[in-house]
Length: 272
Image 1 (tube, rainbow, N blue to C red):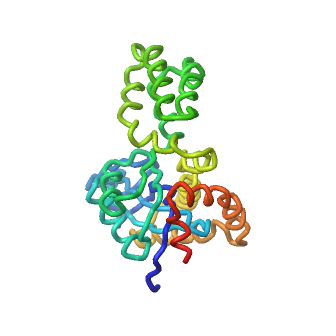
Image 2 (cartoon, one colour):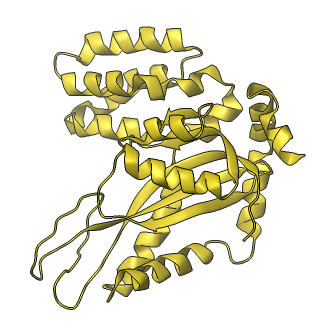
Image 3 (cartoon, rainbow, N blue to C red):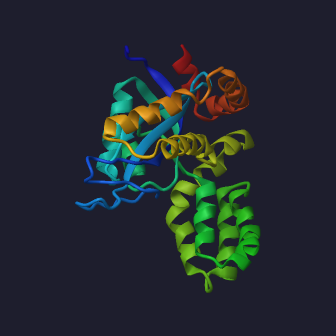
């Protein structure tokens, strides 16, 4: 494939688990984003990394698919993002991720102008993990004014109120938001059309869900190549009629106009 110079809003980088069974030596069971290796028939968990994007024309594309060894870090992501750039993606407006270690640093190196946004949905889910179930509704009620605030300053005020109310009982939730604050707040500077699109990595999560179903149906694989073929077939069958792509493009039309204004015409320049 020839190199194409493109601009994209990179919706997400995520992982899905794939089973791998090598000649009775390694075997994989369910799990997510962990690795355990034994030199017996006990579980070994492997990760698969996928990157999904919305192009300057509003098309949804899977930019990459790679089998990982469970390790994540700036060096790992730098290699993946550099490969994507070398294939023609010269500019990325925003990258939405779920707190993957080392990814923001790698993005800054490859695309210095890219805005990194933490997935708000994942941030909320992770918050509930630290709380008792009977407190979920109360916590959600106080967190909502933070991620729906009109400005970053207003969000910080609402966060202070949340910390006062729950910080003593659930200090881990307060620390979670403090650590994620720099990557959480970028989308608060944009209008509602962009906020609606970029506050979540659901675009990549839906792909990962389809991959997991395909992998579960097949069971185990003799080698890594067989597993990747299964994942590839699952991705290629996501939209066999093309109707999903049409709905996706229509959904993005208003958001793309907002992106073009917010990012000083970088999308328009990519279309020329």
